[in-house]
Image 1 (cartoon, rainbow, N blue to C red):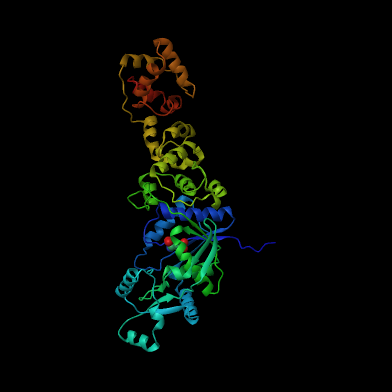
Image 2 (cartoon, rainbow, N blue to C red; image 1 turned 90 degrees about the vertical axis):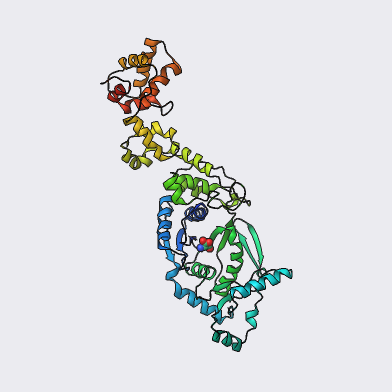
Length: 448
Ligand code: GLU
């Protein structure tokens, strides 16, 4: 028997904005990891910044995760957990690992510049450690309130990253991080570690931009008497020119992708699960397939490029493969909840909302395009009687061909233009029975 705990991972967004491509990728990779390993996925709302955090963003995050199918097994909100952060603070102070500092932001900036111009790394000089009790009392009497820094040990921190492999970071390369601001706000660096300890998170999976945090946080885990979890840091997405993804370069929010661009959740998941890995990016219809395929050893080390056009192409391919059962409910508002219609139109869809245009072709209104009225009238006279099925188109056009001698494009295009008002579209063999004889006659210019 092994006593490895069942994996617990977390997605920890700050509710200071909408979920976008970058942080959805974090949610997705964590979720897939949990599902693949029979573990649990936690949603943690990192909302200690009470000024920037907004309840409407928290709601939007939950809504967007649900829409993507990323359900969570447990959740926590950092603003509900202050007592735990206070207890950790007291423990660190008692251990001599948290110390008060009184510099103003301007003083810190001056020190930083001075160190840089002296050719030294711009890390905090620990001047506050030298303050005596009397110095501190004096500063406080002047009205200064301290911010609190964690005293790093200047030792190496080594861990085996599930993506980056053996990683060694040196504590002396970092400034002692501020854990509590002068206004009393507990900062992410501390809260995250306290939560990861309390909930027994087993794997922290996040972007490479957090590697430096990991060096500091591992020391915090130890200072709080805990063993650190496993870590996996994946390279962040870049835009097509290799720059950090920004809103302008296509870091779209899930809300825009869904509501404005009509992207299917599985198109987003299919792309974001595989981008930056050695696996081909192919349409997948279920998250379960993606979970089974997740493998950290397939992640590359370079920054993958996110191309919104790739998402669009994948979206179309996903729609083309989507079975009727998966869209039955969504077709109802278009009055087209029937399998024949779906199978006929899905190869023509770029986004689901295009269904509306094809529903209009089936049920009208359509503005027929008739260039050769005599031919069209002759064809109308040869329409077979109903009931119609998938063979009716063939028998009708066979009869029209026999009567007029027309074949191929000469035969089909004028009929298509008259029946649909378009030059291209779903197969008419499937559309014809959906349009029905009465409307077909109407479009051919003959009243039923
Ligand atoms: N709230 C943090 C962020 O969004 C969480 C990072 C982490 O996963 O530890 O960057």
